[in-house]
Image 1 (cartoon, helix red, strand yellow):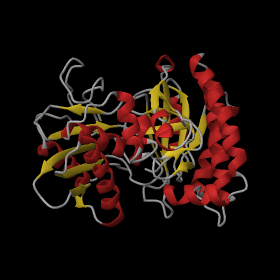
Image 2 (spheres, helix red, strand yellow):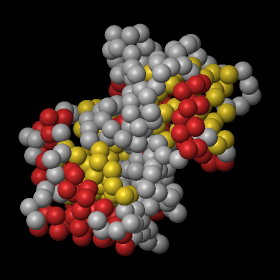
Image 3 (tube, helix red, strand yellow):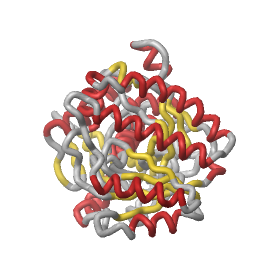
Amino acid sequence: MTFLSASVAGAVGDARAAVSTRVAGQAVSVAYPNIALVKYWGKRDEELFLPVTGSLSMTLDVFATTTSVRLINGPADVVEFNGVAATGAALARIETFLDLVRARAGRDERAMVVTANDGPTGAGLASSASGFAALATAAASAYELDLDPRALSRLARRGSGSASRSIFGGFVVWHAGEGEGEAGDLSSYAEPIGGDELDPALVLAVVNQRAKPVSSRVAMRRTTATSPFYRPWAESSVLDLAEMRKAVARQDLPAIGEIAERNALGMHATMLTARPGIRYLSPHSIAILDAVLALRADAIMAYATIDAGPNVKVLCTRADAPQVSATLDGLGDFVSTRIAHIGPGASLTTSSEWPATDSAPSTTTSGASSPISGATLGAPRAAGGDR
């Protein structure tokens, strides 16, 4: 199974051609998806994207989103996604985000946005995280917003909650924050927490690349509003987050896996008990979960996590990743695997000679001038929903 179609490859090429060097009013950014090990599921404020609970994730090194933003003279924003003009709700969502950037920058120019994912979109593989992290980084630069990494994380959060985490590489915690309104906005941000010495692998088991029939946003609203299991899960998730941070600090990969698996299964239980229920897991998803249990029975450290979709991610050691991948691939033609490792945060690029879409473009040095104060300059990313 191939993940990058010719049309998407062409869209990435268009994005690269759109801005080959740093010029005022235009910028190119790349960002990677992150997979939450303690899930984000539920907002206490829909407008500000303030979560009910905090979450913790691992940023990946595969499935990059590449986004260019160029300011234009025109009456409206122009958005191209994977080689196709964006319309309807997708266009409105990006326009709303750009309006926020413009308001903060005190500017009113419209923008041309060209974005492409080299992974599945809307399939539970965190495409919205990489997408809005890349858009926030490029738009902030194009509109000359002077943001430190924390402020950039808060900005990305307004496009997609999980995007706040993709601003950073490695293991990242997103704080739920305290209070409502401005106090909640200021205190809800993501930050890296170390733990990269663990060097784990995450085997992505893709069973369905199609967009989900029920979006993450719709599913999240329905679950929080109607599931009798939601509040108990949210309360237990607060405890899971505290335990997960301790496990990362002591570099305890088996504990990280155990917490991640129970947290994800609990989240899916809240969806199944929504009114009406939402079932993202397919028979193929269950087959993979069974295979993970069998791997553990054979003394292979493997733990599953699943976002809002049918695709399963399996946490394991780097050394065990090839065996885990081969075991899952051996289940049948319905699954295709990809091994991911810890990846970098969102970044700007200044190079006109970008490598192939599956690897990071050339980057500026950390000492280069950038409107994104303290942000990493230069790297890649992907496709999904809020998690």
